[in-house]
Image 1 (cartoon, rainbow, N blue to C red):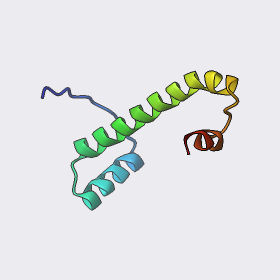
Image 2: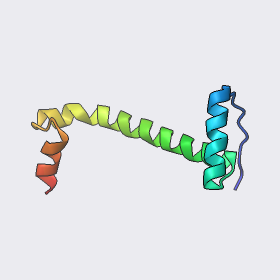
Image 3: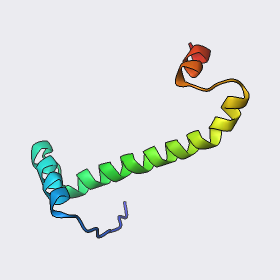
Image 4: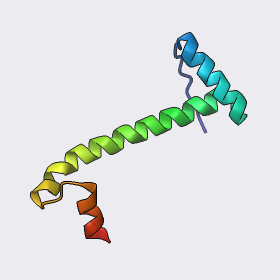
Length: 73
């Protein structure tokens, strides 16, 4: 698998936190940062999809998560 290198700058507190997580989990900095980035990007995509769907849901009377659960239960 071809990979790309990305350079980022971290403030000292964030760097310390990253290193602490790496030590406690036994994972490399790259693994931890890739996982965090993957989670953040997935969250962003989910939130964008949700924003796009909201008008269609509201048009059908679906306003809350509870409304969705009632439909799918």
